[in-house]
Amino acid sequence: MAVTARLFAAMVILTVSTPGEAHHSVAMFDADKSLSVQGTVLKYEWTNPHVWIWIVTADKSGSGNTPYGFELASLAMLRRQGWSKDDLHIGDKVSVTYHPFKDGQNGGMVLQVRLDNGRVLGDQAALHDTPPGPTPSPAPPP
Amino acid sequence: MRADSLKQPTDTAGMMAIHTNSRRSSSVALALRVIGALVAMTVVQDIHAQALSSRSDWAAIAKWPDFMGGVWGDRGAGGPEVGPIVQSAPLKPEFQAKFNATGPSPDQNSGSRACIPDGIPIDVGGEFYFSKGKIFLLSDLDFFVARQIDMSRKEHGDPDPSYYGDSIGHWEGSALVVDTVGFLPEVGVVQGVPGGGSTHVIERFELTGPDSMRYTRTVINPDVLTKPWITTRIWPRHRDWHVYEAWCTQNNRDAPVEGKPHLDLTPPKP
Image (cartoon, rainbow over all chains, first blue to last red; front, side, top):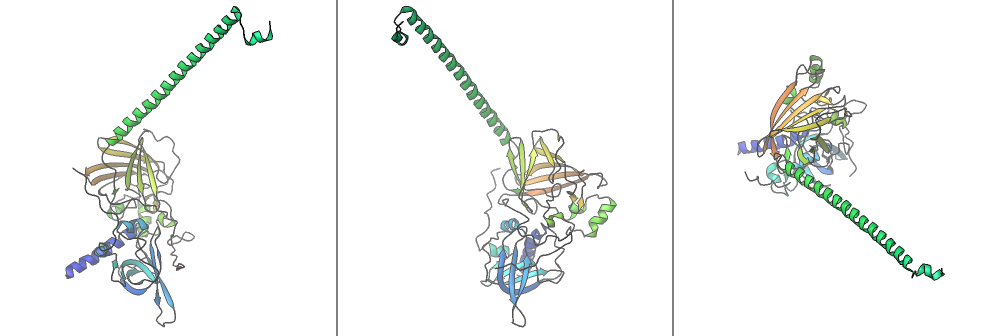
């Protein structure tokens, strides 16, 4: 099980982080650090050249909200992995695991998004339980 | 002569004149009809010939190797290559130093952050479309790109410089061979190393199986490279992938400001 879990984790990182290099490299993110933060979706920017997830978290003082920005791959690359514009909605409670920005700003590159209903985006196994992307065509006759 | 005789000639001479006129007019009508028919036949024949020619053109295209359907490439529909292939470029020392300065993975040196098309030889792969005299290679890295490969010309002529250059192609057996020149000076040999406009790229696309293609690329640029840069890789075909609309300028939060790297983390309005 541990091996399987690790394999899944590797898959998540591979499938999400590799395409992230398409538009530019991942040099602006600290790949040695993986952090997690919980919050509420402020906006899901289903756009090119990158899809962004914005969340707000409660301040430690409890007096306000702190916005976090997370960059993902391009819209086309995410669609090919089965993501869609309907995956996240304003107000959804999520937990985001990410490589932080090196400059210390709030946010980074998404590794995994866990929704309140238990669905995990970035995890291919979870995506199979949801409306998938394009169905692979059968191989042509030889 | 009575006035009405003009309208109603009864004399023989008048009748003969009428008959003569009638014969003349019917001859003219006949001639016109014949000419019309000939013209119509010629037009029909021409359309028919065009249709036949069109049909034979399409029939010839149908015999081309099975490139169409799905997306060819490692990581997406087009896009810059990364890792060992890019690092194998035999850059002249001064360009190697420039490339190394930003690390093995190009970032701030990449024009694509500023939504400048990468062009050839950087943005390769995608979905093929065959047409009469042309092959299109569609990709969607930062833009929806329809790269045109002209199969009807043998010479480049004097093309206007562009990001994707002037590509002419031909078949060598089952291999599509594409020769491209005519680049804008800023188009990179690799990301961050502009080719100065003198890059010459020769690509060879050849099926090695139903869903596998060997892509061999030679990049020639004596100003930037110490020798021709020849690389080969095998691309898988992703039959379930599509090419999507992509416009880099839509929400580019990575756009440099005054030439310096920048990240716009202004939260959007809900």
